[in-house]
Amino acid sequence: MKHTMQTVHVHGAAPYDIHIGPGLVGDGGALAAHARGRHALVVSDSHVAPLYAQALEDALLAARSDLKLARFVLPAGEESKTLAHFDGAIEALAALGATRDACVFALGGGVVGDLAGFAAACWMRGVDVVQVPTTLLSMVDSSVGGKTAVDIPQGKNLVGAFHPPRAVFADTATLATLPPREIRAGLAEVIKYGALGDPLFFEWLEAERQPLLDGDAGALATAIARSCEAKASIVARDPLEKGERALLNLGHTFGHAIETEQGYGGVGNDNLNHGEAVAVGMVLAATLSARLGMSPAEDTARLVALLEAYGLPTRVPAGLSPEALLGRMRLDKKNIAGRLRLVLWRGIGQAEVVPDVDEAQVLPVLAGMG
Image (tube, rainbow, N blue to C red; front, side, top):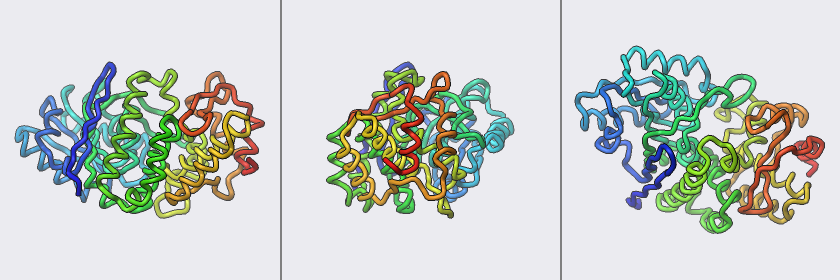
């Protein structure tokens, strides 16, 4: 295993560092440096906690024996990202007696990171959160940028807050316990960064498919760092998503509609998980762009070929109504004054936000008619 640590700096009003490399879950000194007070809550889920929570807590206590620690564990899965479990996290902070200098450690995937971050944002109007992502998807996406939220039946992430972390520790050794489907889902978000703004990275992903799918530590660390650098530079310029940051949602408006319409999940059923839904969403965005005359159809074909080479889906799942999906898209947070506002592209590496997209052009794309 390649033991090279990489650090990505996120600039802006609330700067922080993203540390990438193996063994970070056990680096108590580095982790504890971000606990300003005596109270720390470790939030995890039923898959991750048995693997890594004890090691994280032992490392924290070895570095800071005065820490008062508690653990809150969610059932694994997107269906746990609810107000009810958010309430559980808040109750855990209350039971701990957490003061304003407390720190929440979010140990897990995107669900844990989003929910723990939202609880940290709300407890006493905001306490520190340290993100310790354990999935590729959360390492390259949800742990970076300070977006926190929970889902409600009407849509994903509709209740939340912007709350940047104090630090991010992406322990690449945790990826060894991920199922191949979860690695592929994370790689969908990695591909997104090439598609939206970096054609050279897109080419690198075409060339490095096998090492990435095989879980090569060096290739994955490079992919994570390149993705985090891309996201960090955009987030620093637009922390509250007033403009450019919306580009990071390439494929997400379509993808979220699919997830919401299917019912969240993707574990133990046929529903798409988040990364898979984003893969389909990117193809739909590219297809719509070509339909509107914005981009060459061959770039859509190249994107489809790359996603399929990584074992990712590229079509809307059977049985979903185009009209129902469009209805979900109308609820998207990027829309303004009830008009569809989508992230489309001019071709590989050239995404842009397009306001006021004609719904009549979107329906045939959702129906698979191109």
